[in-house]
Length: 184
Image 1 (cartoon, one colour):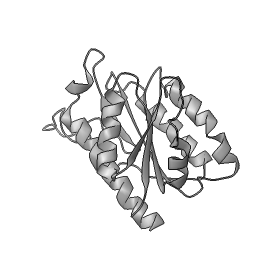
Image 2: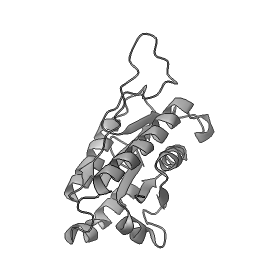
Image 3: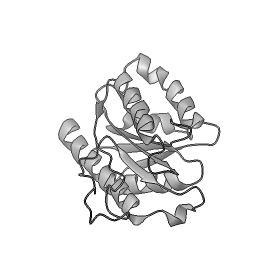
């Protein structure tokens, strides 16, 4: 069985809920980046041992949070020795608006994965974009490159839509399945 790690930062708890759903789908271990941008003890070892690394960050001002960026900059140590080469990578994000420049965040995560010589996995989901589509449908936000969620700025993490969380869970499941094929 493949080992999957979900490394993420969450500022207000919405990205944490997404990370939990992704991890549930992938049967993955969570590695939370703290408020100071640091990994927990043993976090780097978990990432080194993983076959797949799924990265998550809220979208702040059109990109990842500064805490995630600090982690990304610190990943130059495994990058230098190509420690993560040929690992499977994927990414997810959340912001308050429907667009919120979430694609910029996913592009940042994709670029980081490519710098580590990784293999990127997208959602593999069709968007819910028909007239009959409803906001709580799977992949309503309509991303192919990674999972996206939208949480109004005045909503609590408990108010996240089940459709966005199910999108995240199915995304995690897909990453685990692809990892088993690629790394199996």
